[in-house]
Amino acid sequence: MLSRRFLLATITALAATACASAPVARAEMPAAIEADEVVLLWPEGPPGGVPEGLQEKVVYRDNPFGLMDRAAHDITAPSLSIFHPDTPNGSAILIIPGGGYKWVVIDKEGFEGARHFAGEGATVYVLRYRLPHQGWQAGREAPLQDAQRALRLIRARAAEDGIDPARVMVMGFSAGGHLAGTLAMKFDTATYPPADAADALSARPDAAALIYPVATLAEPFAHPGSRLNMLGETPSADAVAAWSLETLARPDMPPVFLMHAADDEAVPVENALILHAALRKAGVPVALHIFEAGGHGFGLRGIDGTPLQSWPSLLSQWAVNKGIFPKVTPDR
Image (cartoon, rainbow, N blue to C red; front, side, top):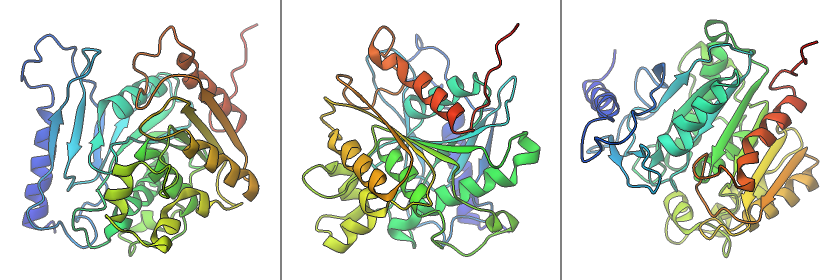
């Protein structure tokens, strides 16, 4: 049975999401993109219970594109927002948005990408995950618990959602790229006791796309906010190494697609370069795309008419080559 506090937290979180298109000087904004369904990761509540006083909320943010731009703060009810394609092709994508481990972006690196790739035939699941610095019993492992559980639930729903459980790609943006990379490298780390039959399934993704990812937590190239929120103010060298992707690369992890902009001032491009070198050294198949300009956090916004507009198609073709997306047979 659900605890009363978790039930209240869940109701609050879902209500906040449901009112995401409510006013606050946004009458002229386009309608919000919403998922076809939302599934809680932990029906009985997250491992260890919800920290006292934590209450999930959705915050609206300004942006230069006049688009809906929401972020989830203080997540207490981790969930998957599911986008079903009109014509499913059997593939699945777990999207992990960024937010510097301070919050979780909803639209820019979540629902907008979900709509795009669902339009290509993938069933897309957008993860809303807990943050490591907010008093969870698992501490730094709390986001990884959610990512592992999400991948397993996707496979558990394979028949229901019409997907191939051997064609599941994880796609992470910024700090979400760090979590996606951690999942790809620590998929078999036991982070929580099994909750149900889904937890007997593998949490290893079949491919990983890391989009302008936070990769290293070592100075001088670490993103300061992500490092602080994951490791605290004065982390030990062992802690830095334990959570830096370049030290975790392993030959049995899935193939990786890396994309970054050279002029990224928030998460320096060295994150992608360092990780690319580590993956090659470990013998992991990896593709690397560096764009001259683009900055950080663009997602699918403002890329039309620029070289950046090619990154979704580059990723889609790579996913075809890796067997995630089906090959397109030309009409004759």
